[in-house]
Image (cartoon, rainbow, N blue to C red; front, top):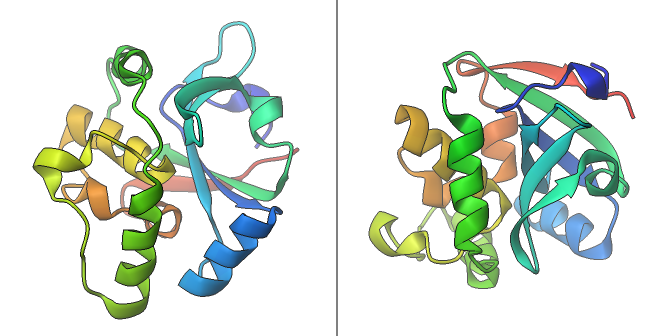
Length: 167
């Protein structure tokens, strides 16, 4: 799929090349280590993603610059008001959930969740939590959004069509 074919609400799952990304992939036995959600497509593709500086909006070209591979997960469900919901999350300026990465690592290796539950987990968000929370608010999908990692979204085939993004 070409970048100009992306639609608001598409989820991007990345396999990045940084040292931290490779450690995450190795320790969680995952192919993907980052997620973003397509926000706007009118004047170029913009994504919203949670990075060290929080949940922010970035140009697609900047976001994928270190990616070896990016897949597009196009929702099979309606994503009405997706841009409004994403904007609300950006405006909240939630910080990155560094502790959530540790919780996710423990969860991936032991199957035991030690992180926060739904009521407190949305104060800080890592990438796939943010994307899954947006889908949850719109549709009720990803009920356990606070446990979601990039691989969970990448491997979800009943809710999404999957495409390879051409860089």
